[in-house]
Every structure is written in C-alpha cells, then in structure tokens.
Image (cartoon, rainbow, N blue to C red):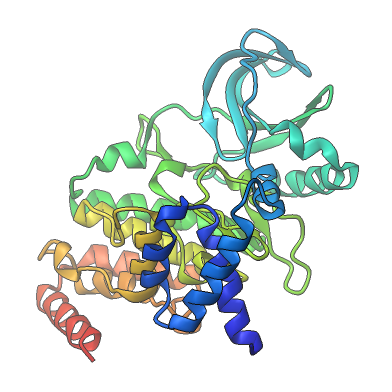
Length: 371
C-alpha cells in the first residue's frame, strides 16, 4: 500500500478507536469513499478489538483522570475555596491568593502529567512564556504552582457569562456581535504577535464581564509556534477531544475545528482564524456553521460542506459575510491569514450595511458550492 493510502487507513483507524464497535461501519461509510481503505481499517479494528489494546491504553492514558475534590485544602501558597468545574487539562478551583489579596482560578493538572520530569520542566518553561501575554482581552496566566507531585496553572479569575450562554441559540444584533468580535480579534492579535496559537477558540472559552469586556480564556493551553521547532504542546490533552490521530489526540471542540486540525495535521495561526469565523457566524446567525448529530458528522461537515450562508441575517454587511467566508476557506493557503486584515474588515463592516453586496456574496457562494 502506498504511503498516502496507508496514512488514510491509519488516521481512520485511530479515529474509529474512540467509537463503539457497532458504529465503525457507519463512520467509515461516511469518512471514506474507497471500499479497499474501509476494509483495511475494519480488518485492523477487528484484529485489535479483543480486550484493551495497546493503542486504546495509550489513548486513555492521555485523558485527564478523575481527581478527588480538593476544596478547602491548601495548594502551594493558595487556599482552594470552591470547585468551579472540570475543563481542559484538569479541575478548576477558585482560590485565595493571600499574598496579593485577591481571588484567582487554579487549574490543577491531571496526576499523570507529572510522570516525566522533562515534560514538567518543558511545561513550566512554556507556561511562563505564555504568562507574558498581557492584554485586557486575555485572561491572564499568572504562573505555575507546585503542590507535592501536582502542578497547577494560576489564572485570572474572570466573573461574567460565557459567550456560549450570551448567544444562547439566538442571533445577536449586528452592532453587539461585531463589537465583541473586535475584542476577540484584539486578543488574537496580541497572541499571534508572540507566535502563540490558541487552538481551542470557542464561545465556551470566551467570557463577557458585566461591563462588556471580552476575556479569552485558556490561552494557557495554547501552543507556542516556533516554525520548525513546535515546542511543548500544552493542549495535547483536552476534555473536549473528539478522536485520536496517529500523532496523539485531536484537541479542540469539533464544531470549531479547522479542517487541518480535524485531520490531526500541523496547525498555525490560520486555525484560530477558522475558529474566529465560526464564532462570528454563530453570533450573527444564532447557530453554528457546522453542527452535526455527533462529533464525527460534524467533522464530516467541516471537511465537505459549506455553511448555510442564508442563515445570516439579511442586514449583515457584505464585508462581514465575505470576511467569514474567507475565514472558513478549507484550504489554509486560501484562508485569510493576517489578524490585522480581519480587524480592518470588522471595522469596515461595522461602518456600513451594504445589503446588495451581501446578497451578491451569498449568491456567489451558493453558485460556487454547486460546481
């Protein structure tokens, strides 16, 4: 089998491992038009499905383990006041920082992350670099705390609603949606200037304070991009993962994954711009541009279908529609790649409601999708 076909088999095999066996054939029918590839994958799955295989064990080892409730206990120099929730890479607590007379959020990493002293050292090094992100639209990462064998991220505690709850399945007024999008873009501009890629940008990771300030969360789980040197991947382990790849676990929430991210390929800043386009679409339309019945179907939509551009309100400026379309180009080479251009288009779109151009953009998008 040639290398390209073997890669297809390998990727499909790893993706199917996260599904129940009765769903394998349905998934493969949707995922690959090639009967021989499907048969190879099924053969591998059947051979390795007897008991807990090495690959299943390896994937399971990457998942955050259940941790005891540590509420009321000290954690380094902090006191854990209340359990907030279970998120990417661990449990999150409200904690009291007595030295600075403030409350913070502490994300305690799963115990299995401390198995490698080298991994912990690289993690601490990258986390301190990420702590250099200082912007009013980014929830600050204050640093790293160690308590016994456990590691934790000390984060800014942000009060307010998540963007997911603010949207609530309903379209936002244009002015508010664009105003929030401008602040999200400013946060990305700050991160991208330092070669930091978020890779899990979604409404649930964006919080709106009571005075309307956007705070992008979980930059502490991002990736520091160094071109040929990828750096330590702080987001490799995530409770939002959907399936495995040959290189590990696909991170991110399926509905906001870029095509290259869903395939487990190398990602860069353009992945954040794809997610930004998904979020802007959702704010204005009140629904996700890619929403399947399950993660696998959602990924298939991302890889094969265009959003329903008619779901955007008729009053959406053509500049904004075209911006979303350029963010959601499947080929990263054709996707808008510069956050500064995104910001420029947002400002232009907010200043004028070019309804005719909007309708022409949608007509062109529909025509293109048919050919």
